[in-house]
Length: 128
Image 1 (tube, rainbow, N blue to C red):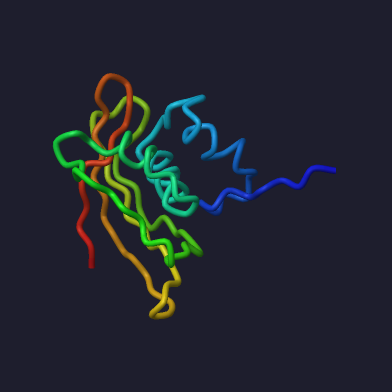
Image 2: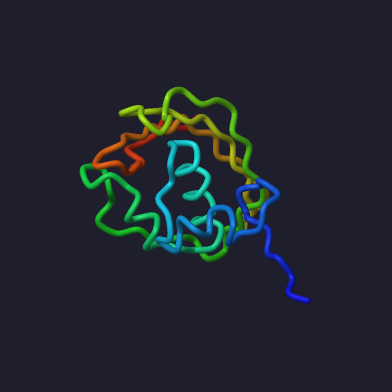
């Protein structure tokens, strides 16, 4: 029997049926929330290529390096504004819990997304 790997985004679904299809390029995230969850998953599995591809070109960093000692543990979506399949923009507020060499921490962000050419892109976010 094959073990199903659960998606790091916390949906309860298997990775392949959830965010994995976006990371693999099989499908594009249909909403800003789906893109945010898939980007969290990309951070959790270390998929820098997906993170760069889904970052808007005007705000994408020239270099993106992930901390190999940082382990993403849990994601909670706090609020969503717009970001539907036909919206031009949207926001997603979330809290992500991680562990690194200094211990346990949390990242709280209000992220901004835009939809261009039928695809969602992360633009930037406000951290607190």
